[in-house]
Image (cartoon, rainbow, N blue to C red; front, side):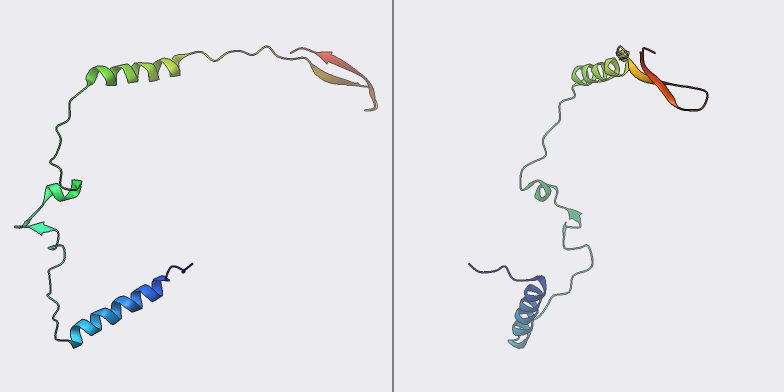
Length: 106
């Protein structure tokens, strides 16, 4: 199984290819920053969606209102009050020594 090349190896390989291209008489065309994505001075919109034309969106206010009303109804629901379970309470004497345990509901 071959290992994937590291980023440093990939960079070095690309640099070597560029230098070989330049040594064989190749020239690099300079392009203004940001101009490479422009087509006739404007962005080519269809290239952003892989060649498909922009789809029209259908407004659905009924669905949005239904979602909002469900969200509001969840917020407005009162929280359920759980019946409190009895808990153990320790009774101490005047000197701080435990005397007995009792179950109390609060």
